[in-house]
Length: 326
Image 1 (cartoon, rainbow, N blue to C red):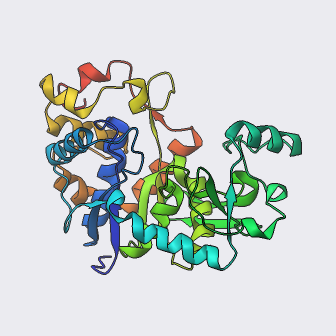
Image 2: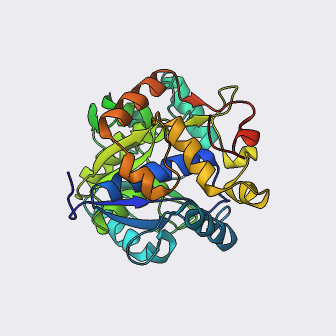
Image 3: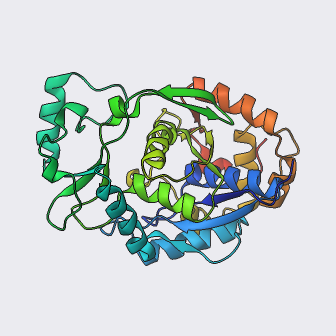
């Protein structure tokens, strides 16, 4: 069913060129949106000033063009709208929901470990409910070399994911009170995506399943900051033949490197389609991918892959990419 009022977004971080895992998640997001006549935005999540740079941004734009992924309207950079984020934190602080936190990661880890082991997948350095300041003077927003955290609500949060089904957790128990403003004087990733999705009218978020627990946390932040939450669509991660998640920091082959050694984008699209369970003949372009995508098939593939902790690339994927999948 098409609905031009719905909006999704491609949201890469400009910390390097895209690898196959990034490419598949972005292709699925784009194709699901285009198949339904949604608006597709492009947003660079570039708040990490130490790792993000314009060279990486340029590589990502080139990668997207090579894959055939377009977007509607101008590209958005998170870093260019920090004052809007700041105003939201100040407003929340005025209501007594934001507090200063000068504890180091080590201090938080030691304190939270003393209170009990964190859940699997949860950060070890959690600012738990018990660590909230008793001094009400600290519930404010102020400049200085400290973070600011949001005092989120207790209780389980249930996500009805359009692909993976029902997911439930207690974000406070899993993550603790999250940082919303950093000691670098920038919004945190978790807060920025919540505020930006609401500000730009995003109705549907499609991304890797490693961020499914974050969806529950982001719902809690949306409640606290009084903005709407989107619908959630999470897709399986791509792993190498040994089961390791693909990552930029591990120097997995990038689309730019594939292109430079003569790999054709058509073959990349075909292999990505095959990895998603598409039947032959595999689509050769992003447009054909969007035309052929079927919700029920994607759900069936995704749930099976998720149960198996992601699907794995063959060991000889670099050679296989030189031609169509057999």
